[in-house]
Length: 90
Image (cartoon, rainbow, N blue to C red; front, side):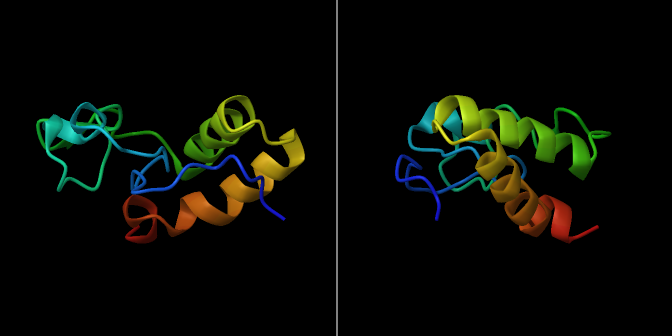
């Protein structure tokens, strides 16, 4: 069962961080599917990051920010990140 502190979306289609305020969205545009950390001026800020690296980062984020146990955060990251738009198109 997933932890109950997971916030509602929308979520970045690269890192799965929730985006609620205009400054969370790439270029401040709430219609953008990517967050301001992953995309700027229509380009990925880290074009060479791998899905494995992003999965590790997401697991750490889930554990620290959503207070998930480490193993649960890792499982969620592994089942979520590869299905996001950025990674499923590769």
